[in-house]
Length: 148
Image (cartoon, rainbow, N blue to C red; front, side):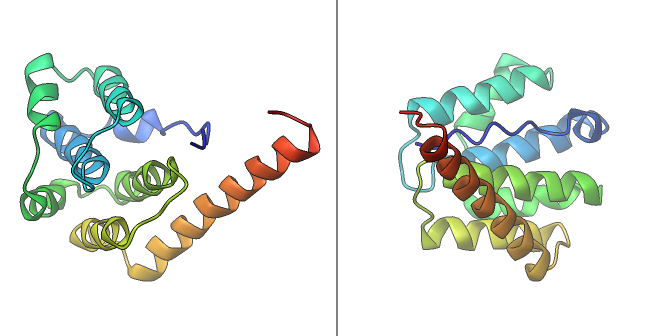
């Protein structure tokens, strides 16, 4: 499991209204649950981010129960702030890489979500490659600095 030590741009995300923040979080939850199981690290990540956004416990429960991917893709269309959309793509890529295994279903979902928000496939690929480069960089650092 790779810890990418990335922080969301809370300034950009604080400009979203509650429904946009919930749509953002539902996208993360749907990616985390795409394999049919939400592991403890993914669950904690989603809860922590939701709390940081000031999302109520009731809405967090709603976020964690998301099952319909088509609904999630439709809901993210309300995120009309390009910088927030790019931030969501980055966070989806980070989340997809936390288990060091990027699946076809994760790639497809990230693409659908990005396109629903008007983000071009080339930009999604660019963000994904940047995240992969960071994973490689962090793994090399462990070797160089002889960390376990």
